[in-house]
Image (cartoon, rainbow, N blue to C red):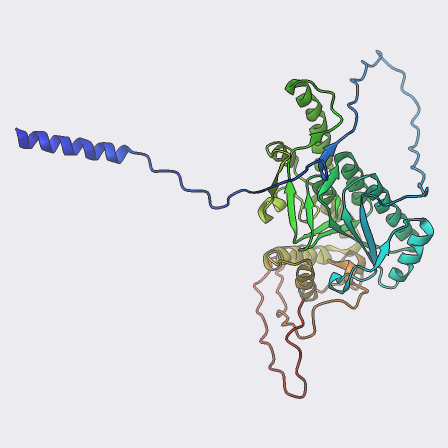
Length: 399
């Protein structure tokens, strides 16, 4: 009997051990956060007054005649850039500098600075500072002068810790309507309200940190959490609508609400793509597709789509914006870009007229095959020739 009881005891212990749950695996990608010293000095600040609820409409109104919308007249009144610093450059390789300092954004001065950019059909506006009304006015003025000169390619080279939510939405909508590419370089950041500016770009090249946190209501008159939440719900509704119309995910607004405004959640590369803040703008891509199919043809679209896939697979992990551009320029040669008939619609069209590109000594991938369905075949990197003594190239050149 003692032996039987011992056997039964150990059998029960074994059964209980088998039922014990395994501990959950530790997360592989920890959320990265950092402390913000003063969220009011940047951040995502909302100051707009809350709109009063509209009165109920009268019953059976008589339809009024449609009135065509009147465009906003350009504002060329004196403007001081108090929220940041700006530079204008006709070159896209920022390793050579940021060009001319822009202190007076008057129409005459902007025209003077942008006229040399006509030769290369590209301009780069470098801005470092807060997102505010003067920044919004600056982007609008540069766009208008570029339009008047016929400069088609515009790059906003951005470094900002955030600012006013309403101004970020205004400038983002303006950017989205006027074909801007946005860069966040490896020596720059785009935090808080700046992410709304990113949402407006046709194409985004990101190497610096992108971070988010809660929106702050500095002009709030709320005296309770309930009242403050009501105000914030109205602000976040505006943000969601803005993100949706610009091809970004409205889920971003919900994630922002979970991060205290004295912290900053840094978005990973996967999250940036998930929320529609990196690469080609999905809304603009849809808008372009019908027009490009009609103008440039099915073969152009097939090669363009294949280039996008190849860029995502081969260039995304580059840690610098100039390296991203160099990788993309190498690839576009393999897909027949810039296209003879549609050069301005080709990938990285901002480089079409500029002498910049991959270094002459850089190893170039062999042509990438594109199947009839647009699938990309794996490229084979050509062997790098060994330089002779008579023609030796500096190994220090890169790109």
